[in-house]
Length: 181
Image (tube, rainbow, N blue to C red; front, top):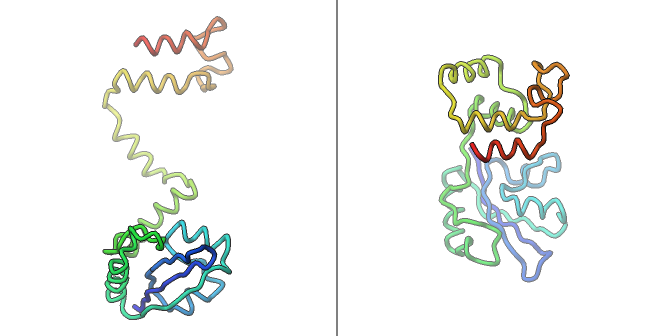
């Protein structure tokens, strides 16, 4: 697989700042194709690129295999000590720390579900529920659950005000109850 190392120069600040990066794919397609959304893995640089793209200049440093380019990026970052150099946006000196290998389909689906708050499949939820059956809860856990449910309408209350608490219930009494236990 083809990969490349690039240098990004920020002309919008004085003195100019730099970012050294690595990416798989073709440089001209990845960087200059307006339809591609990837620009960099650095959140700082990504935000700056969105705010003022006209202030950045891209340079192709080298291209080759993925392994060669990872080594090249690390060599360049270490040569300028980018992690401690105030002229560089890079937060580390490479060693592949921020390079992700390709995710499996299962890993991608988990990430997607988490990002878009898609509930876990019923089979998974059932397994999670069954794994806790028969394990007694500590008093602390029971109190936390009770406290979190206070004031919320529960199906077994059927419209009654907070169940057994009744009409003379005061919030501070409940807090004192949990503080004392």
